[in-house]
Length: 401
Image (cartoon, rainbow, N blue to C red):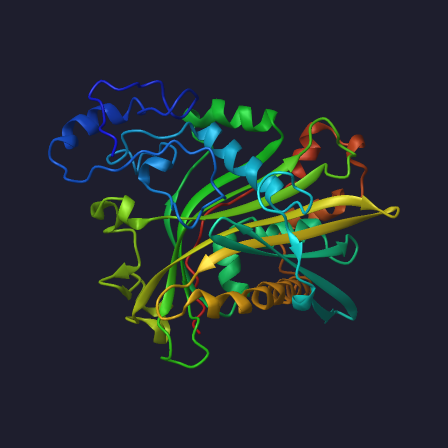
């Protein structure tokens, strides 16, 4: 276990440099270090997706944020943290990736759906990364039929609450921590991300509560504590390249034990191992139910590319998870491909429902209109406007099951 130095480096962890203590943390750390029995381990991470379930993130794995400052004494620079995660995620779902385990077709899990009168095929793949098995689905959608801007609005912007609205198994989404990346201290970091082609990044820590039991009371509900990182990538050197525009949503598991208990007191919806959100009414019949802490990692990506004279949105989602509790992994794994494939049907149905109900915000509708303009004819400001502005984080889901 690492021992913090009283006079450790203070070059920021926000604007750049090596793992360090943020200047604003020095006073807080000096005041609390001698009184706290909680001493977190610091790990220099080069990989975030490989072994994600085995090494969930702790307080000192996250970039500096004032709400964590009392308990963080070292942390990765924000831009390095974001670029590593987003860069690794951008390549993770590539079928022909040269690094790590190779994706293999699992065609027996393929699915076909009839959605709005059109056939949608979902391909299944899998790969082994050490002791962890990852499953992936892949589907392609012509831009006139399923628009990139609609997918981004539902999958990236406010990912947690949108998932809770679309997925019947998700009971509730609780925001634990939300980074405001528009703050002045992150200005240099955001500029570097933009130079690398990353737009509208978001970082949140959320709790997602799932009801996994097909029969009420048969299995305890699960809580997944997650880091959610999202951004849009616009290739600055190839605006008309087949991979010129895409968005990425990464979820990594958080180890609540690598945070001090004081941090969770007013933030968590888990009390004494039970589901007890502050707003009791949002829990409905699930309030007070026993919980099992489970782990989950995923990479969701939509790439807009040219194909056959048109534009196609290639949508992939890969995941590795462990529901833990009484469910052994050999029972869990066979059901995962079918579950994630079915999500395609649920999301596309949600898009149709929102279109029919004129429920997409005006900003998204305007982006859809701009999508018909060749990108090279747009100025940089207009290019940025085509990407949905993030509101970030996870609002309370008030839908009762």
